[in-house]
Length: 255
Ligand SMILES: COc1ccc2cc(-c3cnc(C(=O)NCC(=O)O)c(O)c3)ccc2c1
Ligand SMILES: [Mn+2]
Image (tube, rainbow, N blue to C red; front, side):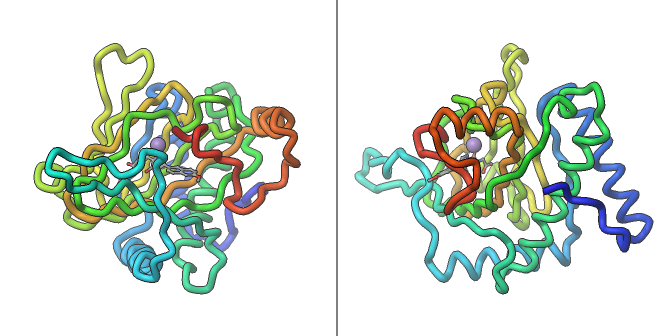
């Protein structure tokens, strides 16, 4: 669905989007990773956080990782991330819906802007539903993995963080990306409130979430490249239409 920038976006917001797109295009070309702070502004960010907390309290989050609970030496189990899928049209998720449409605008616009850059190489044909993830603060973490190791169609990962007053020294939960070709350098991303992160979903960006000692919320969207998605669906002879989670993300392919 080609998202067109709504004409009613007043000047600075449109300028805002244009500005962000320029950064996304150049950072994705240069590093394959891009961080944008103050993405929605505090008011909308807090409204999104409120909706996520309400979803979480309703208890329809399920275990995310394949790795079942790790039994630590003192036999305390560490829960992994809990996830639920949202399409943003649900009535109690209208601010999550606003976040999704903002990210759609950025991705579609950046894709159009970057004619010869890597961003322009893809034809963004759609995306998954929004995955709302919560890491309970009991030392839960995510083992080093690649989101899309086997060409399932996902080309860009977008993660929006919702964690107020997050202090990595005290709360952990750092996202560490090991970008291919950066030799021994790593990208340490703090999961700060109203921060959005973009990175290539494939093997260029193995990443891990370090143990979190405070409840840690994030909303993730994965954008599809038309050709790769088409090929993946053919390979799994699945009709291209998304079912259920809005993506054929078999757990193993996510690991
Ligand atoms: C049943 O189908 C699915 C489909 C997709 C799934 C994706 C994840 C996943 C992947 N990556 C991360 C991550 O890297 N987070 C980085 C961060 O929070 O900073 C994460 O939190 C969660 C977990 C379970 C899934 C199950
Ligand atoms: Mn991941």
